[in-house]
Amino acid sequence: QASAKLGEQNDSSNDPAIFELRRTDVLSGNRLKHPGNALYKNLLIKYAPEIGETEINTVVAKVSKSIAAQDPPGRFINSIGNAQLSGDQIHKRIAKSLRDVFKRAK
Image (tube, rainbow, N blue to C red; front, side, top):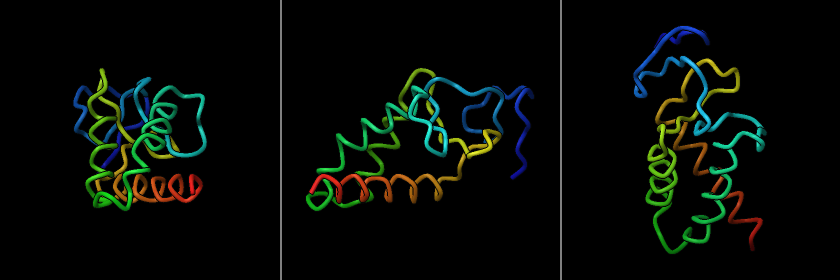
């Protein structure tokens, strides 16, 4: 998958190439001041207690769908800020983050 550099136009939210970052995007790395990352953290806190009661894949899907349901749709962006993460990368990231939040809450 080729990815565009920041500044190149890309109107499709499904295309992994990024035109410009959105306030609803989740940026890789520790960037809690970004609004999309703050929302992501709140969703992790909200849904982490469901782990153990609900299949982890179901909980991951809830978080992922909540990010994508924002206006404009949120995307998971790599640490460089020039491409979206793949579906598999997103799933692994959310699952790990949910487990981490769940463990800390115990």
